[in-house]
Image (cartoon, rainbow, N blue to C red; front, top):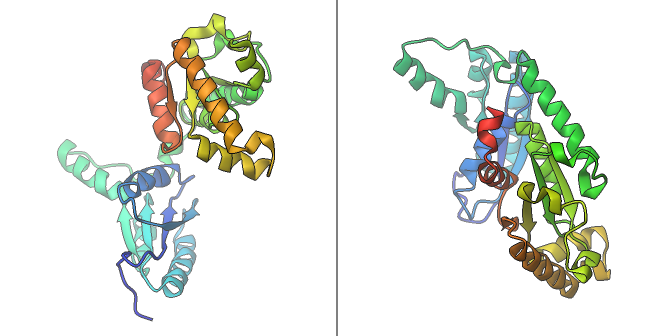
Length: 282
């Protein structure tokens, strides 16, 4: 079957994110690039811990199978460091985008230095301070998810508020895992709207609040997956809750954004910038 590079027929492309570590860098950079192509539909395949030629060779077999099944070349975003593993990957029937090579080689030329080419160096735990800060932040996010506890909110870096299922939990965990930010989150519920007040634990921490909203139509879809055919998931109820939440956030002077069309990375970056957390975490 001939393979085509075109996606104008609406077919789904298979995209592999390949790394000798966790794959977070490959997937984050790759996703950022792919979002520039709005009509692209792709199947995501993660391939972490490809830290030997043997594993790379085995992966190439999977990539080639995908090429045959799809009838077109897969796309590979790779952060492999080992040149032998990289050479093996390039034998695949795929378009290979070597992300490290794109940056490391020009930097070597500019700096007049040779890179270490050490596998897993970007994920080393030698910086124990950073590692422990992230673990502590993850534990904090889990303990303060969905308004479970108001204890320790004084130590939070940011407190996310918004209606249920607007993206608060994944954003809190992303901030913790990527930046070591202590993020709590509180749902705004019908009882809050009836009282027309923020949850009682929050006003004293107003400067730490950041709001998330979401399009009612999208919210209804998300809630329907959890509680089908319930009032909680009805479009009418979602419209009422979103409207009330946005009205409350505007009145309380809380900065907020809609998570409807934004990635977690974009939301986190906005929060970090809004609360001046980049400097504190570097």
